[in-house]
Length: 165
Image 1 (tube, rainbow, N blue to C red):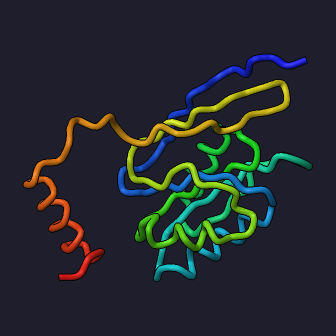
Image 2: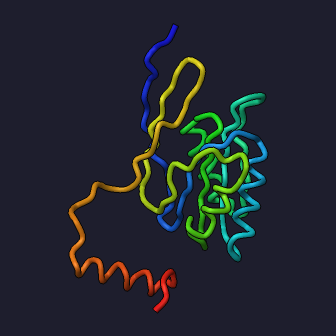
Image 3: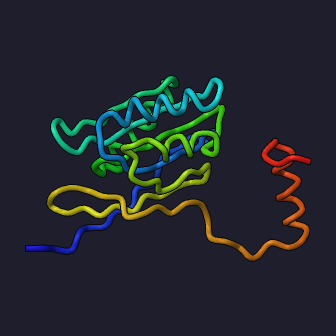
């Protein structure tokens, strides 16, 4: 017999000076593999990672090199509670620095978001467990950029070193 799942919205607790990546994976070695991808992609990253194990002991598996970010990752993973999901908090680097390495990990199935924005995670819960349906990343657009906005965007990218010239 099937039933309609219950829907929940979980607001991600996030320090202002951090970025997050939320995704889904399928194997316990995700914790070590994502950690290795972060530390080998950029010098001196600070991170905290939590992975929701969905079989066996069903524990929140954690790893990181920053106690605050690791604790926040664990709290958020527990609140989300969706099997095989992971949440990664970053400082001293950006998702753009590590995202391709993480997407290239064999057991990573999907990425829901990579952002510095406030995030809400939309959860479906059935009698069996919980799953992430999607995320709300940031705010509603306020309009279409003007020529002045476009010039500011390109100047900003050059200022922070992501575009040449």
